[in-house]
Length: 418
Image 1 (cartoon, one colour):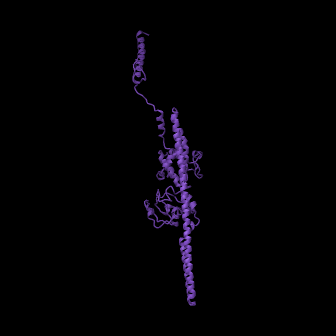
Image 2 (spheres, helix red, strand yellow):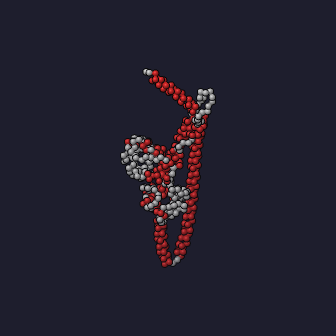
Image 3 (cartoon, one colour):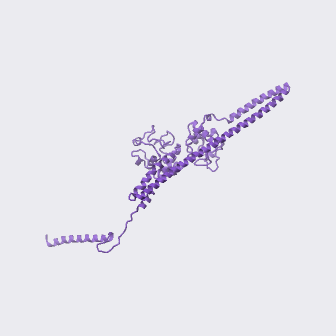
């Protein structure tokens, strides 16, 4: 190795070392957190602020809504619009399977429970029931919730859409979501306390306060719900007592009127008999014949009147109490005990009421074109198959197939107006 080559190597090593020192010095000046080696004070180039414990607690509150909140805010009418996405593969009639199984009474039904439908292995072996929470997660991402399912739908991304769909499915089969909401609130209260405490493990005092606040709120919700249920039960009991007293008074008044009328009739009949006795035999014979004709006519009139007011044969064994149970399928869209319209018109005094006559409700042309009143036979026909009775009606309910169920619900609606 000659001197020139050695000088080149030495110069390269020294140059690299000087460059390394230069870059380190420059980095300390730009990004250094303390003094740069010159005994002078230097300001930091930038500061990264970290959130304190109180900020972390505040951020805990900004979470997605719970399943209970989603169900409370759900709207079945909006869910009916979303149903169009599902109607190509599923049906809402009991037992009517399509590409997918029917969804009648699906809320609360065990997964993979329709015997005549061929489920995928993933669905058949998954287990559990279709609770609102399970349906909510499945609708969000079917393949993510249940890997291996043969359902090709990609899911609903908006939480409110999933809640509205669940409310609509429940309304079709008359499923009450209130027990599920109550259960969800009870389950979410301790979980909310745990979630509020977890992010602030370095600040135990703040976490304990957050847990206590959540527990107090949960206790307040439970207490409020208990009070509301008790008040509602008391109101129903008072109303039932008043209705019973009114019915008893009406029966007693009617009985008194009938007794008075019978007394008058008896007195008049006695006077007529006395007058007839005093008449001659010919007059007596003529009067007797006239009385017989009058009796026959009166009997015929009574028979006709009885036939006019008699119940149809299918209403003979109607049970209003059983009808109240059947009516649960209707109360998502109708109110029967107050003149309040919902998706459908109120049903106060529906028996005998003129068709399409509720003020403030916008009927379809199919209903406004109907004439007459809602008698027993008319209500029976409409409840059996609304779309067949009034083609073009906006009512989406598929009807009650059991004549006994129809008679029971008509009797229940009539009992509310008495």
